[in-house]
Amino acid sequence: MKKNKPKYNQIIEAAVEVIAENGYHASQVSRIAKKAGVADGTIYLYFKNKEDILISVFEEKMGQFIEKIAHGISEKSTADEKLFTLMEMHLRQLAEDRHLAIVTQLELRQSNTRLRLEINQVLKPYLVVIDDIIKEGIQEKVFREDLSIPLVRQMIFGTLDEIVTNWVMKEQKYDLIQQATDVHEFVTAGLYEKT
Image (cartoon, rainbow, N blue to C red; front, side, top):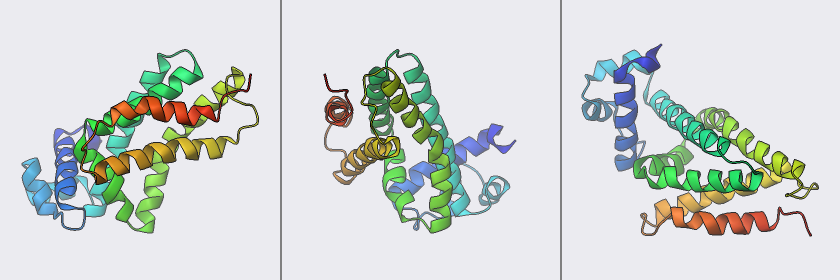
């Protein structure tokens, strides 16, 4: 499988950097190849075209992103702790990889419809993780039982997404990770079971 080949990973890493620095449309395949230290033709052994590189970047990076979050929340015992961990890790992973944050928050948004559909497929497992935390919170009787899970999921993901986009647009001039506590507090204020 191509993903086990070291050059595939080199190209993915180089693509994140080149796309973040130049924008997707201005990122030539030759520039990605040069950054990866491979011949232009080598890229086409792994990818059909530049769009395929962008989708693969998202699949690979989002796959790793979701895996880390799933592992992080598996070590927590309550839905509330899991939700905070998910929020904190979401912000931390993008704060620690500025290039990836630029690609996910800006460059992927400018893509065509087919590409957006592929991106939505890649995001599905992450949204399921959020749904599971909400369901768990309802079962624990910590979160209200009358919650609309799709709406709460959109609220959580949309809030995190917008916070990271704003941080990228403001050229990372403040500590993104520090915002996790406030985000968790604001979001969960509407989820808690009334006592």
